Image (tube, rainbow, N blue to C red):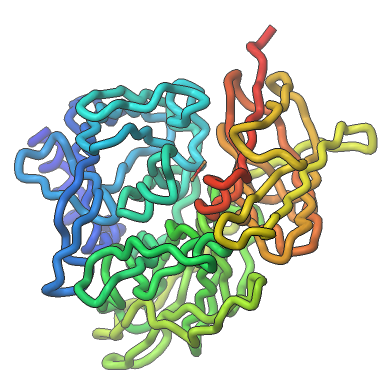
Length: 459
Ligand code: C2O
Ligand code: CU
């Protein structure tokens, strides 16, 4: 281990393409395995006390590194970092007072490692479970429990997964931003009050967090190009990002780089989704920039709180201007669909006859009372998702990625389906096992908007 880090250090000093800056607020899980192609980590979920607002301790549930003796729990939890082709082994221990699992959102893992009640028994308090997977995707993913999700994730159990590999554009900094919001009482404690709007729209907090902090600050090199990767870990809040005076070049989505990057002024990120962007930070040393989220109308007259600042960026000394961009990006081959490709329909509906206990259904069924879908590995299907409700729903599928029929040049595992609209995706069924699909507004998933796809064993 020592030698490896010394070599890395020397390599960093000696070469002009030194590893870019890391986001300071994130911890990284300790890899205890000396094999460079195996990442072996220990992870603990436990109740703890953390300050989400300075000087105001809150009782939370959080992950901590189980392999570092002096590790403290954090929100987000420690990042799992690996590279394409690695074998990852996670020794997980549950110190929570209730059962839990860990789901590796977006990673195509074997079913036994998918971390849902469809693929494993919840890990009982005081028990352990080993997750083992081969990393076959690059980009930003995340991990979170898949039991009582609206409570466990809300209390702080979520963390990023960063997989290196493939085309890596030269940047001055490669930063991961985990977005969330929390509903805090005046004391700084997590509020346990849930109102009808929370149930209907997914709980929205009154404090927005970036890597666990309210509007953190960072200093960037004036005129440099940075890579920012975002994951929306909130229960219900949508983030619509803008950096006034600047544009984003979207280079990747959920499951890796897109084939054709595009420029945009705003990036909408629904719960569960990830976006990977380049920003050229033009301006003079001393300039202050603000990354903020602006209102997105996702239905049911959701109130507009006005722009919320997410990140305060100060430009430092000017550096080298950014170099040329790569000429190739993702290499996603379109899933071959044709007129005869089988289609499945998914009707997303809400029933708010009793606003204190709304029910959300897919094809008229509310989880767990559902009929699992069945298929075989390699089957190609078109999934037509019809949102028949008065609000948007981010649709997420486990175990395999899909492509938007309209924009096939990228992998998605979570996609926003706007209210009263249809959206079609192409899916090639993945490995055998029971895979869940659901709305990633966790209050909706926990109130019925969830189903299962059973992929048969390969013949
Ligand atoms: Cu991010 Cu089924 O979950
Ligand atoms: Cu929903």
